[in-house]
Length: 152
Image 1 (cartoon, one colour):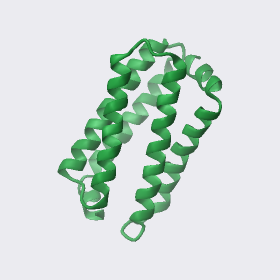
Image 2: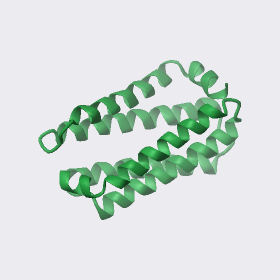
Image 3: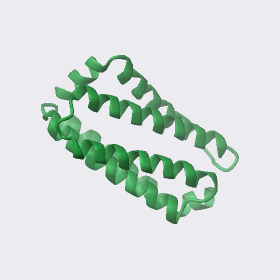
């Protein structure tokens, strides 16, 4: 499994680059409208999902294949939902982002624990999963704060 991950390191780097780009754009334009943010999130989630599914089909092996496929399908579904219904409210968008963050966080932690013998530095995977999970939980707990932060 670790061999597959090292051979396809660029997939993880590309997913991370898209995540960073999404964060920078949302931070740089805090006054962005909800509609534009929905489209931006939809495009990001769709692209991330397609990349994850492609990696699951072409490169991943063993137990990671199913989990990566699940993450990819969830990203594609959320991306399509956001693009098909652009009039979505900020609250619903935040709930989508929160659910996605929780799901990705849990799956990252599960994969890190399942592969702890094959990975060096699995603590980094657990940490990123925990940060994603915490972010999602905080959005669920205080959605109004998240909406205010998103709308600038």
